[in-house]
Length: 55
Image 1: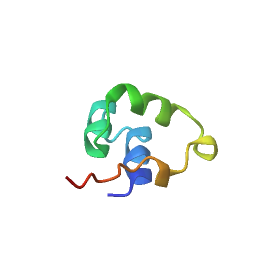
Image 2: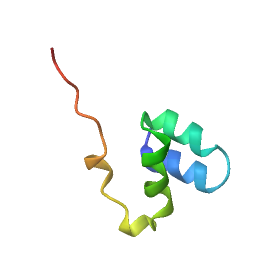
Image 3: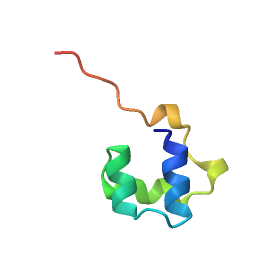
Image 4: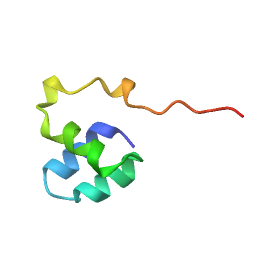
């Protein structure tokens, strides 16, 4: 799912901050900074994606 859509759903009140963090697979404390920033100042989403680790 597109991270921008998840954050938009939180901002519109459709999901809670905990649900938003769970969908994005990050800690609730990390998401607070993301969703409170103005959209134009937010870190580019491609930098937020987790890199897969090949064992």
